[in-house]
Image 1 (cartoon, rainbow, N blue to C red):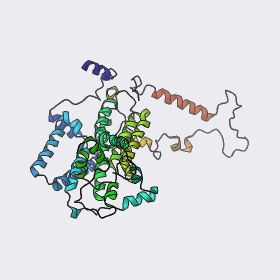
Image 2 (image 1 turned 180 degrees about the vertical axis):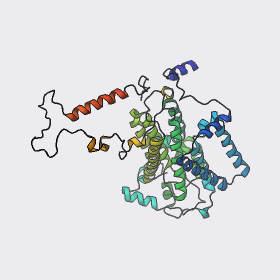
Image 3 (image 1 turned 90 degrees about the vertical axis):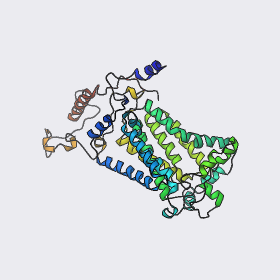
Image 4 (image 1 turned 30 degrees about the horizontal axis):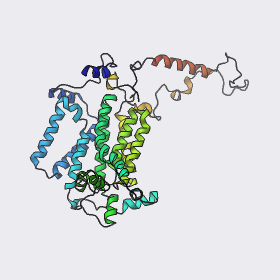
Length: 416
């Protein structure tokens, strides 16, 4: 079995390539050496400073005994220091910060929290879309629609991040999982921060209480998932949503944000399957409104949040080539060059930067003795203009220069 798996993934591995190899050492000196050789950039100071402030806030606001909080942080530090675990846990630092803040949110004193808005989201929904879409979709329910909505909202949402991570680890470039953890963690972290700064009631609140004032001591509601608990004879979603850490976190929808982020990364690595991922996002959008957990404006906001973080991660963290079969098929990792992609920046040998005095000219601009004629389709084979000859020569030189530049040309491509 192990031989078959090794042959399946490693048969296409380039010789002497170690870029996809995993760290197997348990010696902390390896980590300390990497840290000492690493030069911090301005973005690193912002990244670690922001996440550090979140962990400090959690240390202060969480009511757990100080000993257990320090023990938890010490355990994280150990996981970060040991090389074999650091390669996974350290890159997931934004995810740890998001989870820590999420489970601490319910302990923030109500006196230090903003007023819960009940009317804003349904009003915006009506203004933008003409009606409350969630109420329209939830007006007619049956057991088949309940199950159809439960699958993405109550099952896939919680398991999909792990499945996506495993698939990206095996079939994506070696650094794509690191980018996924960065974008996924920051999207959820900023989403929870917005939910705490702008607490808003979901559609189920309006169905149960109308437009009455909401307060932080209230219990949440499972919405349409209560029918799933009754159908299965369990008390999973009812107790879970009634005691949720962020009860009034309708805006933005992190269900929408997570599904969009998963679809964006899968579409980036497996572009031929993009229609399938779009269908999944639309399916989850419908289920959230049918189960009365989000307004449509919440879903749009969650997807926009994911798109912004994905685009930043794509340009600054993700490899530009995702076409090969597995992580072990790559011999090099190339990222996007922002300077080359910037149309406002140009190289010194660009034709637009060459002074006119350096150009060879065999005519006088003010000459009236010759009539200027342009090449036409009726010119013979030998009637080639100077510009055409120059362009053909440059193209030939360009092709000769870059033939065989990629070491991955002979590698087999992944079936997308």
